[in-house]
Image (cartoon, rainbow, N blue to C red; front, side):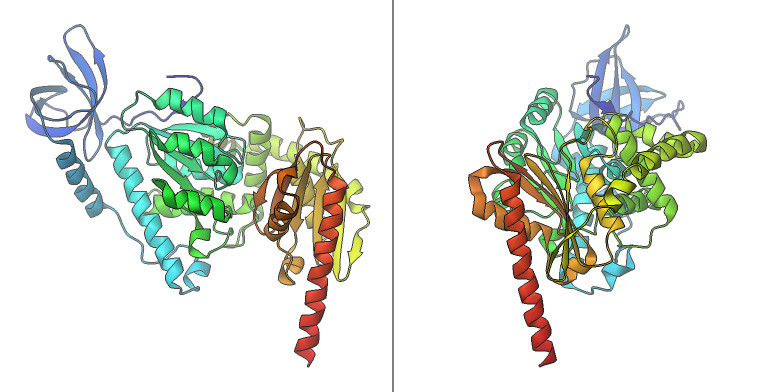
Length: 471
């Protein structure tokens, strides 16, 4: 196994392996030659078994045989589809299908769209569990932040897979080629992308992946029409609340929580960390959730490829967790004085805060996104738009008061893309938190001036609305 991948070891069950002969069937995986025959793992509908045979067993075949102790005899190949259907029926009989969401705020919507979203969560969850039960080779890429990490931890509770951190919001070509290299000769490859890749910048890589693997995207970031058209044409399983006119407050970690709930493997702790990390108000979160999310973000910043188990273990060891938490808070607090002294540009009722991030140390925590988020948290008494910028990038944050009067970070980015077109390399995110990357020969100042004009238009519309309400 390449060191690049973190493998979730198969849970081998040796219970009830006595001398009583019994018939078993399943999928053959991980065949190894031994001195007296062959060792292999048989993926049965209940649990994987570590077995031995005097005769050769072929990788990936569905077989039936008589088991005595740990030795399988009288082997017979059976139809794979027949076995798959049997596994599927068994899975259907064991899961608990929810009739409502865990988060009451979603149930209160009482909409057919919300119910359709829940049904899709159930169907995709069942399919992922089935693939794991059948021993398919699964790769899970997850975004390297609190939401992505907690999402992956939840899938790992019930799924055998190789888990890989993905620091970029895009599915990059180099990563797609690495996945292809790893999976090209694997057994029924499956690729799951968590909390990223719902963007046109990932399309070419997704085309590569869908040519050799079953691809699943579980995400909560908004996407544009070009990506939507791509998804409709490709055999990609796409699970995103925005497909059902729902919002980004339904984090990827929450979606994975609902999937894990099907199999009794849900842990509210991880879901709450995902919500805290992405500032979601889907359910009430507490200070501990926020601190745990901050620790995850802090660790992921310095070591994005850290194994998932490490994140869990840090939270279990209070002294270690406290060390990282103190360091993270101290680094964030070091920005307070600079951010507090910023004076906004007044555009009607909107306060526009601008901060130059060109001198920010990109190798030290917090990153640019966190600095702009901190600025928003410090300066949210009035409708506010917060922009951190460098020579070739802008990071947007919009507070609730600005959003309520019509300021939408994604709409701003969409309009900027239409106006400047080839000068913008990439951009997107959420309605209240987005980013934009510019070509090096283009001026950030021109973009900021255009944003000011857009915000003036929002102010004019808001004044007109108030006037109409009075009349």
